[in-house]
Length: 102
Image (tube, rainbow, N blue to C red):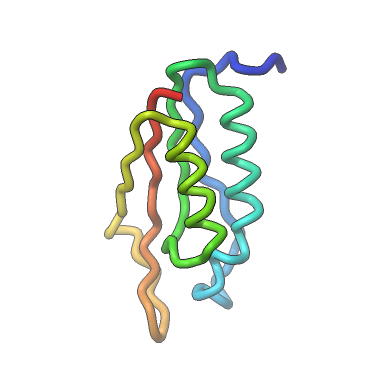
């Protein structure tokens, strides 16, 4: 597929982390990174990306978020409180990063 031909990408991948929900962000970090890189290589100028992330506690998530902020003109975080993943210690709420104007 040629590069920079898509106007909008939605990335919502994950792995089954039911046995270790507290480790979900760390376990899917490489997948989320690959989704972001793929999206950036496909988006045309002015394009948009919706990227599902998780609690944004890990340094890998913070670094990726910083790079995306440098790449897109508009960045917004949305948390879906209806999709809360409860664990014994910390609730995990998926974060959707809405990025516009690539």
